[in-house]
Length: 242
Image 1 (tube, one colour):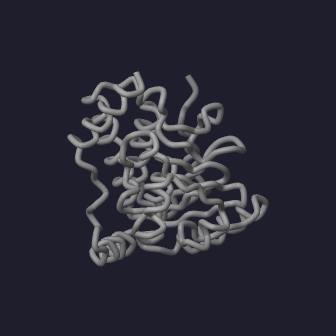
Image 2: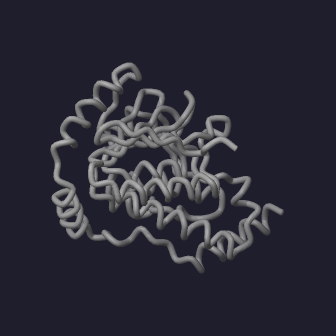
Image 3: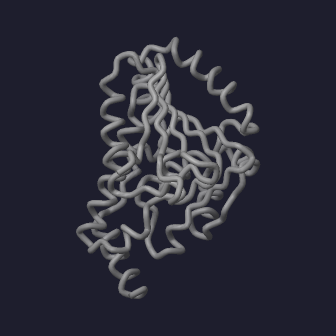
């Protein structure tokens, strides 16, 4: 079985590549476990300064949770799925290094939430963003309810979450969802610039600044979704689709 997450280590930079291109890099159990291990290893690397997340292939960063696996879960399984995702994304967001998601193609659902757990987001004109969970019958469970609101504001977050609005790279830049929009052949140059700046940073200062920034947020600890609510809504959605 091929690795679902590829890890490239170069100097003070790690690149994690979601590696299910034939499935548009949707996140299954194995990918969540591999990402969790990678985040734990990253936290323990004293030389790491920049962690980059990318998607394999030419079409997608990630289309979120693997619905084929998710729809086969019972309610306790759905709770475990949400819990593991929350722990993973919260761990990524708490790393004492700079984190950056490169979005070229789809960033839907859990893929959007993964990108939101990073400090920065870089998109190409081919990027597309959506939070379709409510349309599928359950709320976003991996952080979008708080992180998306903090990044784009409540009004835009409601459009994306309640109405499932899909936005392109240009709109994402204008709303503040992404920090940079550049052509695909310019991505490496921008990454190199970020890498050079991140290499000079002290992880303890990053950790302190991250904590201080979070404390100023009205919903700094609001990434969690009540597991009982998730299980109830999931069961209801599943019974209606069966």
